Length: 116
Length: 113
Image 1 (cartoon, rainbow over the protein chains, first blue to last red):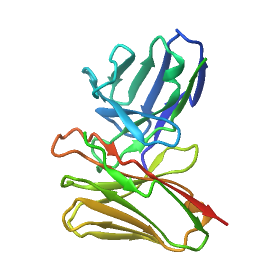
Image 2: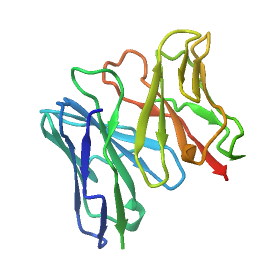
Image 3: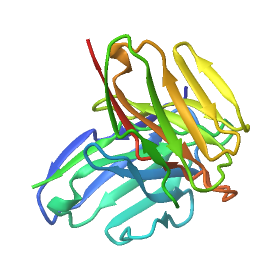
């Protein structure tokens, strides 16, 4: 199946700093990628849809200025958590769909963010 | 988007027992997908169901889509310890065309050896 690489897998940062998470589709192109947040033992909550070459579409309740998304190419989307606080600590996962493939989503490995 | 409810939330079974998780929606679904997430891992696609009443099998896993396309089930026969994980159903809302996947609440399966 298609491969989505997410980096870093784990990051610990201090309160007030920003953290950038990268999501790359390695062997396919994706005009759209998705960013999810997952709290322990809970489901994946869609945060935003990342659109190549245009602004991301955020879900209700997700702060645009807090979670900056950039989708500069057909294979790369980034999520930047700005001015991180302990409540931002979570598991962040990206996914992408192959433009020419089926409708299944391919997920990155996820990023465990801990804000101290 | 409206989240899809899954039951049960948790299930512990003895190895060799069967397991079923149900996915229920109040609205008609265009399709339903199933994913498995191992502890500490990321979701992995299992199957997609599109047709009313559709049944698909993958070895010990049987997936069904309800006649009204409002519910779906995943049944595992004779569970093994490798089946441990959380099973999510996911839907694509309507005809948005964005393939914005909305995940169900998930069922966490624990298999006791």
